[in-house]
Image 1 (tube, helix red, strand yellow):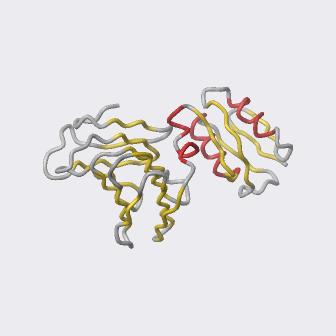
Image 2: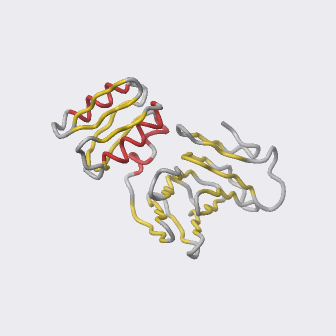
Length: 198
């Protein structure tokens, strides 16, 4: 959808954003719970700030993704493109600058910046699941949110990692079939619960 300043926002499953009907004053402020992709309208004299789960992202006109779900261990901010950098500020740290292709991870009070696979981070916005050496726990949290299902682990380490990609608009069984091709994990669906077994 489009914000009052012309910025565009895409919301992932189980996410919400709060913003005023008009951006007045010196700063454009929005509040995010969950995950969103922002394409911010360039206004150098009115910075755009996103408040989410222990951090503030400040920008004047770029494209970036913020993953700030309450059930995820960290908050991930990925700068996709733009001429200007993005500032990420945690409660316990000074502001750190992100450049395109970099991601800031906030875990507790520790903020770190590193290069990232952008395609994997923003795949959801393009209608795909992309898992790049990702833990089954993280994968199943995404599946749980998107398909509104419960996940139960039976003898499986949630930290075991997998890779692959599939359309998010496939049936959940198709997504799980692709993961089962590894031969290391299996799934059983009963009612709205997915059981994960070795």
